[in-house]
Length: 58
Image (cartoon, rainbow, N blue to C red; front, side, top):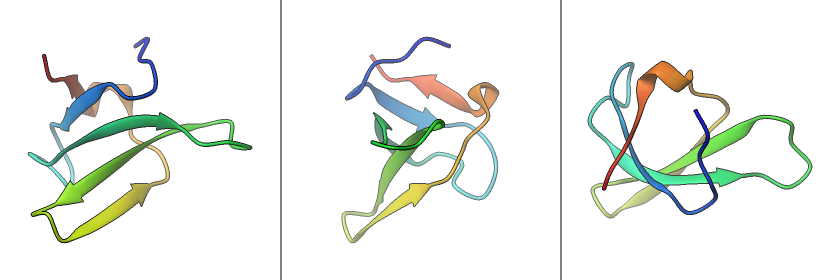
């Protein structure tokens, strides 16, 4: 999966299934991370998400 910073994505599996967020590359980290906003209240930075669990929102 080739995503660029700022791409809107949806989590399709796991504890955060159905949540939407923004794909980021975190400075100083090898892995890319997804930051998701949960019900407009909190933002959660996830350490890693398998590419099979990410879908691009168009």
